Length: 66
Image (cartoon, rainbow, N blue to C red; front, side, top):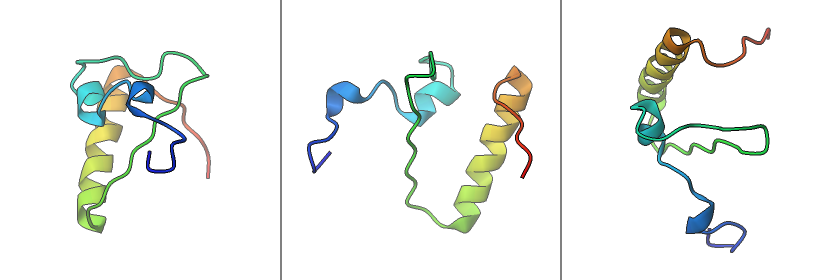
């Protein structure tokens, strides 16, 4: 945002609003999800496990092989 590439009008929702179902996530292939966390590794693992569990429960996402 500091560089002026995006502004507040580009932001649809906070990640928590999507996780709690208050706003819809990506609606088509032209949109992106951007998440920047400033925590530590333990926090990242906790968040990822919750997001993964919710995605599996809702049947969302695409399974990719590594």
